[in-house]
Amino acid sequence: MSDTTDPSLAFTLPVQLTKTIHRQPYPFILPENNRQDGKIVLVTGGGTGIGAAAAHVWVRAGAEGVVIAGRRQEKLDETASSLKSASAGTKILTVKTDITISGDVEKLFSKIKETFGRTADVVLANAGWSEAGTAGEHPVDKWWKIYEINVKGVYATIHHFIRSQSDPATPTGTIVVVGSAASALVLPGLSAYSTSKFVGQRIVDFIDREYPTLRVFDLLPGVVVTPMMGETYRPLAKDHPDLVGMVSLWLAQPRADFLSGQLVSVNWDLEAMEAHAKEISEKNLLRLQYLPILPVAGGSGI
Image 1 (cartoon, rainbow, N blue to C red):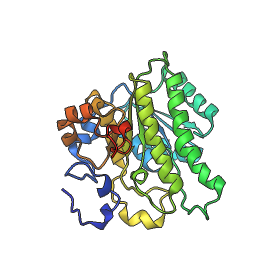
Image 2 (cartoon, rainbow, N blue to C red):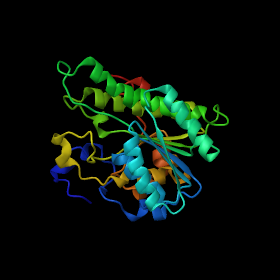
Image 3 (spheres, rainbow, N blue to C red):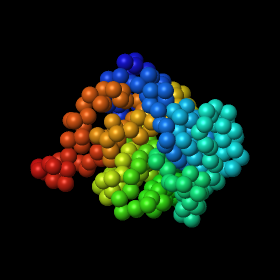
Image 4 (cartoon, rainbow, N blue to C red):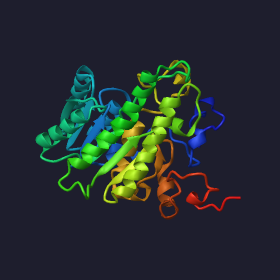
């Protein structure tokens, strides 16, 4: 149990579910305990930060293939070189991709199929962007650019993953959308980032309802130092960058089926979650819901 008086938990505690708070890797989620032999994973935003860390985690887990996509080829090449040095047989593929361009994403999945003979088994939709500014300060085009990446980019990734399958009407596999606790908070200056991440969570809900054969999750990544993080939030960034990748290993297994379509956080204790799997699944405890007083959410008004 972490010290809940720790000021660095300011963005963690409002969305913390379990009594135990994990900020570092722990045995239950280690790659050695969650092997991924035979699986192909795609990581968008895989050249730097959380994406690059996740790619390394999947290599450690023995994945058949790790595909990293991003806009900057030089960053992809740097990460690929490091991945190949750590790999004991995992095939590494880099594909320069702008996820806001539908044609780019379509070509990404075509390249995966050309290289491996089939599409990915797991998609970690990690690419995202944030800039700060209040409504009177933040230029419209810059504000909307955040939506282009965090919403359109996520949708394009999911859309083309589905379309890349042999039967798009009944797609299979796992999609993990990297969300943010900011989606639950009102943080002045972060309206585009916070609301776009909220929309991403809602997309997960729709995909789960539209395609019961797909497994899809919204994953809160904790507070991690990344290239886009402003100085204001760096003192809070105490979560290990490997946690997203490690939790995605667990989510890629049938044992996590009870959470499909719902929210999960890298800070939650997954062993405790499994102990409550039946209750979480039957009551949809972690699915996004509207105001509980309203009939749409089961309420009866006033």
